[in-house]
Length: 499
Image (cartoon, rainbow, N blue to C red):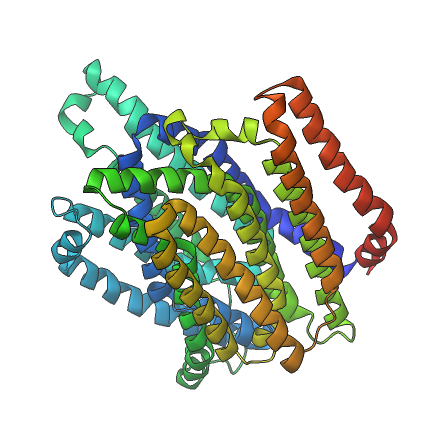
């Protein structure tokens, strides 16, 4: 089996959990929740999960990436795994205790003073997720993509099932006074049942991963936890923590800034956050492909760095990623008439952000490709520099644009951030770890995809919504892009796949 076929296979398996999981969320959960809850209630959920993303960087401090670096060779894997897992276990318990102790002041800061229980719930969610991070990383390192995907999918089904239990079955039982549900079910908890469902899923996932803690067995002479190795891992991961914070700023700071900077009372502001967050999820198709790719690609890049043709291989991976990303962009934007139904009617005024965010996520995927050089060359401090540059762009443009154009400003800031990061990572990478990326080809196909979308945007209004001619135009334009790629790149793609 060729190297790229193996990567594609692992991407498919990791994508089974990531893509199918997000597809179910997109196809079922987002439409359901955006019809079950009004936008300001959804805004609360989006706000809290944004803060949770920041805290998750603190809980894991990128030890999973350090495990890839120091445990990529089998003879070093046990020491690296034990060192990382023992360290994460101790720090997680400490952080859970701190969050519970400060739950009321944190709730006051978030403007939810009557809901300190939200903070306690998220403390345990983050704790279980952090304790699962290292075992999940080990499964990726061992190439156990099927087990990884199975547990991730089970987590999803438990989460979705628990949400339906609390929001559908329990009200039915309480209304009909069955199983005493009227005594233990509280409808006033409302949106918080989503958090409780998440907690249940995270706890079960951690329980399923407990055997993984003991699956990596010691060989003769191996110590397990190693203080000297921990120092090396922390030094390696420290810049990545800064990168992680900056990355989360790029991902979710816009929600927090929208809440802070938009005008009106809290309910009005949270309504706008809810609309923005719901429409953001339509761009999830690009994001889920990027995430699935990243799950498989990071260990793949490390495992193949000693190949003579490794740099050409990395260039080919980036090229193929860009082509698939362009197809995803067109597939969604040309069929927005269908995609819009994945959010409730009250949220559709924000659909104009979707094409911008799709391009932003495509740039993020390209960044994962062109930024691998600083991890392979042990120059992770460059990752921190790039991420801080991106975060600065995000912060500056959000501060400038939100007062002017609201959440549209946040969308443009996201695109500008990731595009800047790709450019900086590429320029620095060519100086320190040159990889022959086919930049002209990638840029030409990206420009072609954007041009086709702009042409569609001009022609579509005259054809009307949900018209046969409109769908015919969408298929025709997607076919043009497909034909051009096939005629121009058939031989190149075939050669890459055979490697």
